[in-house]
Image (cartoon, rainbow, N blue to C red; front, side):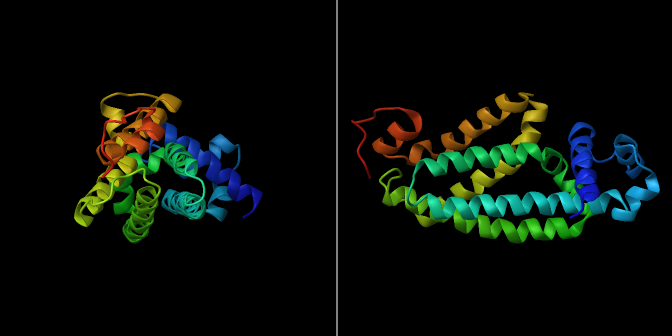
Length: 212
C-alpha cells in the first residue's frame, strides 16, 4: 500500500472515531489532509470503500493477535491476559466500527458477512483457550459444553459492543474505558475459576474453595 493510501486511512480513522460515519465525507478527509478531492478519489472512490478497507485492516490485526496468542497461551499463561488487553485496545482504536456496526453492515453488506463468518472462527479459538485454562487448573472441569458455548457468546457480545454501552452509560474515555471493560471480561469468568484461577487472575487466595 502506498504512503498516500496509508495516510488517507489513518486520517479517515481519526475522523470517523471523532465524528462518526454520517458526518464525514470524502471532502472532509481530503481537506484534513490538505489534498484535492479528486486526488483522494483516485485512491478511494467513496467513504464506504474506506470503511471497508479499515474494517479488513482491523480484522487482519485481530487474526494476527489471536493466532499468536493461541500458539503462546499453552506455554505462557500470562499471554492470555495480555491478549485480552490487546484485543480491547484494538477495539478502541477502531471504535467507530463497533459504535456504528449495524449501519456499517447495512451500507457494506460484505462487512456483515465477513464478521459472521469470522465470529465462528473466533468462537473456536476462545473454546480452545478455555480448554487450556482447564488443563492448567485455572478453570474448573465438568462444565457442560452448552454452558461453555453460551459463555463464549456472552464474551463476544460484551467484547464487541461494550463501546455502545459505555457511550450511553458510564461514558469512560480512553485508558479508563479499556481497563474497566477488560475487568468486565474477566468477571464473566469468575464463577468458573478454581481457587488457583482466582488467585492468579484476581489475587484472591480462595484456598477453601474446592477445585472441581
